[in-house]
Amino acid sequence: MVVTRFAPSPTGYLHVGGLRTALYAYLFAKKAGGKLILRIEDTDQNRQVEGAEENLIKSLEWAGLSFDEGPHVGGDNGPYRQSDRTELYQKYSQELIDNGKAYKCFCSSERLEEVRQKQEASKLPTGYDGHCRGLTESEVQSKREEGLSHVVRLKVPKEELIVFEDIVRGKVKFASHLVDDQVLLKSDSFPTYHLANVVDDHLMGVTHVIRGEEWLPSTPKHILLYKAFGWEAPQFSHLPLILNEDRSKLSKRQGDVAVEDYMAKGYKKEELNNFIAFLGWNPGGTREIYSLEELVAEFDLNKVQKAGAVFNLEKLNWFREIWKQRQLKEYAEEKGLNIEAQQTKQGGFKLNVIGDEGRYIFAEKLHEIVAEHLDSKEERDELFLKRCLYAVKDKIVSEPQKVNEFISFYFDAPELNNDFFLSERMGVDLPMASKALAICIKELRGSENWDENHIKEVLITAIKESGLKNGQVLWPMRVALTHVEFSPGAFESAWVLGKEKTIARLEEAAAAIV
Ligand code: GLU
Image (cartoon, rainbow, N blue to C red):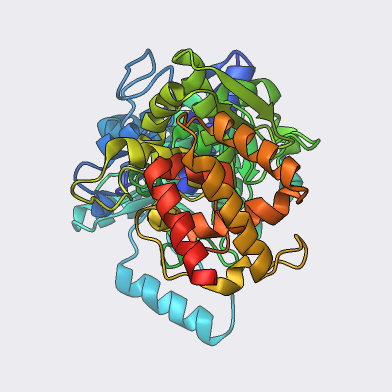
């Protein structure tokens, strides 16, 4: 059975790179009908952060990644926190010593520092010089009696080519003489990452190790450890780095890197998971919108790229936009609204809700999307606000944070700029605009029904009778209603404003032109 794991060190929060590792491990395990384990690698006591584990688990749960085993769900291979397993590491470290695969090293930090400086001065690769590698049993004994503290180091073979097949990177080779005699157990008897990681992966039956590329240099050490124990090594997959736009390694300085930051900004798990899944992988073809279940069905480690993947916020927002369109459609369907939905090439939807009542219900969901960004204005007419939100629904899903900008002209129109009326393409000059506004005023004044379709019907009929082109009337009408260059169309804007305000703005504009 496939068994994989996510093995974060609890350093405070879940990094987006960590989420990608966890997501890939989840997708891989689920697709194979295997098992996913959460293991907390907390042996570096200096880096412990209060509440870090809870925080990690919270972010993973938010993303919908369920684990078959872990500190939060239990399981047969626990404990799942390395700090609760220290005796095991000590036992296995002793086993290596007994088999001559590891040795006790009594070198002081001063000596190690001296060695390092000398190596640096002679431009040699730095590393442990093997000083304690050949200590006899009795030498070890006497050093212990002297009360000297020690670490345990792996006896790395001098000349061995370490080769392994990485699912992502293909054949990887390391020469053992470049691998340091790695510390396995520190002087406080706590294991290093290497020992704990290998012992746990073995004992937990992990068949596939999926982790970031930054762990690639550790892998030869792990392979040597598996050999020293006489254990079969799991299959490795090292995922490409995640990069900033300038191709430097993704860092906090250039934007948010914690999953919780995106949670706080209102991103939804579908949006983030979909985006993160595509950071270094794609199923081929042009389709990009996938739910978690669909990702499980498609995921393939063999299709993970080697090259670094750029974290592009615009792309994340694109995913958000498409997912929001889908969520809105689902919402409309759940509420039984009368809608026309047109699927876009990207997998989203353009929606039209028919009837005011449905639009008001629909606007409640829009309100939810923009709530945190919306300027609170006292005495704002709720229905008016809902109509505004409905009119800019497509813009809201792509840039919810700009909602105030999108709707402000319905509340307070900016000063009218007559130049906006002019459109060569539409064939509109000021006299034409004036004529157009007169038609609109005349027709709409008499209209009792303010349904958008009705407004449209009335005007289209009148335009036909006048012999003008649609654009020659509707363009000036839209400018008169909104005073801005770009806005929702004339009919929709009239519907938003309501009859009274519509007529007032048309009259005001008509007066300003002559
Ligand atoms: N504890 C390591 C980390 O924080 C785990 C690396 C691995 O998966 O082996 O990423």
